[in-house]
Image (tube, rainbow, N blue to C red; front, side, top):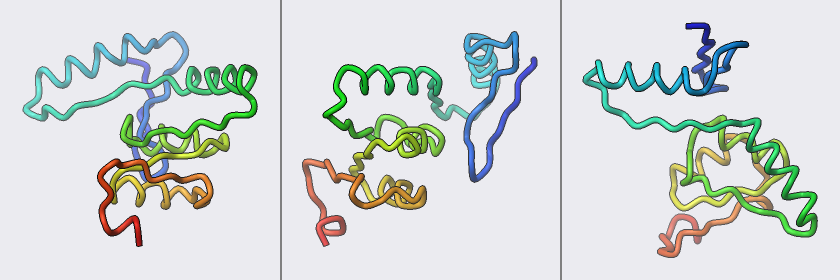
Length: 123
């Protein structure tokens, strides 16, 4: 298949080459998962779609700034996308805040939204 996999400290995603679709990627990942003993979950996100929805949001509600919930997907690339375009990030665990901080997101754009507050984020 015509697929570029980038998986390192900076990215954890696939870049689809021309003629290769998201369905092709899903079929490949499902085939790999079904023939392997590794049964880890994976998620699929279209970063172009995220950016389009962000622009649509800005047009409809320019006075309101949404916060991306890291628990939805903690992929570095997925979390970096809203951070780079100036959106805030919502975290609920120590692992999530460490990821957000490692991306250099300013504290003013980070909220702690776990309803069961632990001591470490309160300090």
